[in-house]
Amino acid sequence: MNTVAYTVTPELRIRFKTPFGELIKGSYSQTMATMAKIVAREMPPMVISVGDRVSRNLSQFKMDPRLSIIDNKCLRKSIRPQEYAPKHVVHVSNPGGTITEEALTAIKAAFETDNQVQIVVEGEEDLLTLVAVLHAPERSLVVYGQPREGIVVVRVTSEKKAEAAEFLKAMKNVRKAK
Image: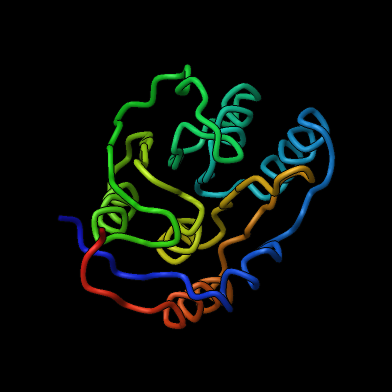
């Protein structure tokens, strides 16, 4: 049984609807063109993606995420798995509305290797954005999709790390996943 470290509360679920970074509105080609300009201008130490569509789009635009966190779903519907082959693939369990110890450990480990890593989540990956921001090197970019609007780019700063830590602190700790 996988230990759940954090569980989202109903109050936090409402707060999570607000983008955690800069919302870039537009179509696939518009958001990726803007993202390419941001990467060229800011030269982040790494790009991290959370979500299947944004991970695939970044790869197709040759901005391969150093870490991608996916669940083989888009808008909660199953999709075909990613077509690119990262150097290292890790499978974790992370039920919806939670963050498990297994997922936490996998994300931390991904930042300790030089390999391109893909974490495939059985469950839901959305909340793992917080863990990625908390553990990514400063100046990195964490990117996730904002359904029907575009993408959100989180610039990893000490302030964003503190904000992510506050969100995690506000989430209830529980003992076991179901």
